[in-house]
Image (cartoon, one colour):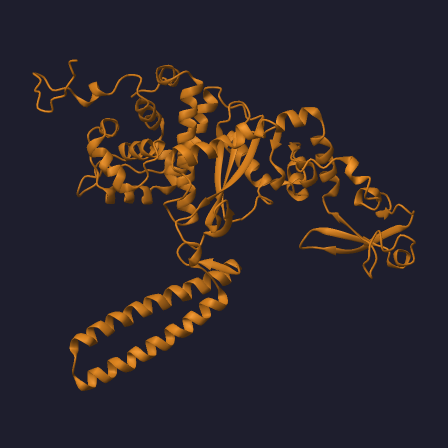
Amino acid sequence: MALKVGNRFQMSLIPKTVEEYVSDSDPVRVYDAFVNSLNLDELGIVVDENKVGTPQYDPRAMLKLLVYAYSYGIRSSRMIERACHHNISFMWITGGLKPNFKTIAKFRKDNIDAITKSLKSCVRVCINLDLIEGNILFVDGTKIRANAGIGSHKDKTTLEKRLKHIDEAIEKLLKDIETIDKLEENQSSYVEMSKELSESKKLKEKVEIALKNIEELNVSSINMTDKDAIKVKGRQGMHAGMNHQVVTDGKHGLIVSSDVVKEANDKRQLAKQITKANKVLEKPCKIAVGDSGYSTAEECEKLVKVEIEVIVPNQEQASHKKEEEKVDKPFDKSKFEYDKENDVYICPEGKVLKRNRIDKQRKTIDYKNKKDCLSCKNYGHCTTSKTGRIIKRKEAEETAEIVEKNFETSRAKEIYDRRKEVAELPFGYIKRFLDGGYFLLRGLEKVNAEASLFCTCFNLRRMMTLLGGVRPMMEKLSIKQ
């Protein structure tokens, strides 16, 4: 059987241009067209064509390079540099430019704000193409590893002990150097000790900064590699990471906003993330949806006050706890009736529990009746506390009850059932296809930019699918290339 064999040395009469190697249906053209549509002034990228000195690389070409590279899971500046030399699509999108890894890393570092804003520009394009409605918003979060190790987390006591040891080491080194200087011997050792002293002083400065950050941020421990990294629990156990929050639109699951926060849970994120998404949309949404991790009365109340319907199950609803299960608990909190007019609770025996104290930190109010509780026939079954039964009521309990009843409706459950396919899809794509299970950059601002880049890549790929491919999308965008 005859074989088709290639020949690297085959010559052609007229060499092909890079443009000819990239077909009209190649996805690289979409990324190129998208960045061409961006207003660099709005992004904060200053282009000075009259600047004196060594010519800089075209910032638009550099931004194209970053967006395209991240879209295919190529994130390392060295790997991006290599692609510019070996990958036809990379050569095409940069117009043949071949920046080295230092130039790529510097551009990414110097244009953090512009990279972050690129997601907002992408959302505007989606709105103009009627791909985002902004009526139903789904919020979800995931823990992503930081560019730091869990072993770098140190508490105040550990840092103070280390600082003490460093001071002792420095003092000893200074004495040794002084002795050698007097003897005027072993000059090589003196040089080595001077280097060791310099390193010890640098370490001391690093520890002092970490202690200062603990005081300023009012935290129990801090990561010395990345002060913004926190301890998060994942499937592989505890590790240093950050909480990536994403708000997606209910129409096609496109991402509206992205935010990385330094909190291990989602309890204080619902109103914050929905409000941020509404600012991007320039209008309030009608319905906000989240899982039970967002179920806090205070957060729900902030949205209910601005007439946004909240579909968030509480812990019992999320665990599918049925009313029948409460029958076996005759003294469950639900069996105590709240009298709003008199601000008291009435127990199953008809006794009145009055307001006792307010917990400002947890934002709850305690109701109890010690005298009647201790003499009640059900004492020992209802409670065994020496202070009697205490009913805790949240300050926003009324809102919590409204949200709880709303979730029980068939309409709310139908909307909530879409959460997994709409809210969780982006994270699966980012981690699996974009290699986004960890951050390369350090510091909250830089990490937010990297997260926004992930989300922009997801939206562009999703848009290609929704619009039927590269050519239809290019036609609808109608962008000058």
